[in-house]
Image: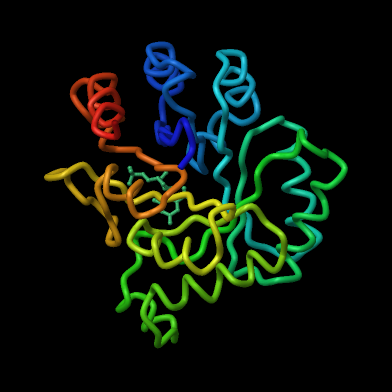
Length: 231
Ligand SMILES: O=C(O)c1cc(=O)[nH]c(=O)n1[C@@H]1O[C@H](COP(=O)(O)O)[C@@H](O)[C@H]1O
């Protein structure tokens, strides 16, 4: 587990509202994630504004394209100075190797590069519709193995798979787990969920948490409650 495991997923269509929350947060308590919605709306300016406030940023754009294109995209993320970025493991071994290789010139300034395995919104039945006739956990394991072979830092997966994955791939291989729901919270579109405390106990290194914080009546109080529940 990281000493600062919470990553708040900022999925807002309003920059002022997002900055209002960020200004109440402490960079010693959490990291932040900007994804497709906010990056499409507000671009690198938002990344710079978050960096200026002292936060580590996970740029979650889930690149999935031909190796050359993805290598260029992760290079652009490295130029922004982000702490972590990601690709889809389903893009394949060559794509992931090209992405990792593109980061080599950045040395210890390179972002952590992780690969999304099976989205936490997907169930075994959703995989069947894609022609993948194995349980999600098995497909996650297959994609995690490819990711480790490509030399990436770790994967995005569900905390439900964390203990099996830590056992198989070792403690240095980072597990970033969305689909985190405090007990009784609305699951929304997530399927493979776990509570924050259970996720850490199962072996998650980082907990990605969005709506349980950002949609709470008092987001700061929600974050503090989750933070305290981990002690
Ligand atoms: O890569 C991700 O961050 C991600 C992968 C995944 O499998 N599932 C998943 O929910 N996410 C992201 O994690 C966040 C979860 O948000 P909430 O469901 O609101 O807590 C969203 O920003 C998703 O884009």
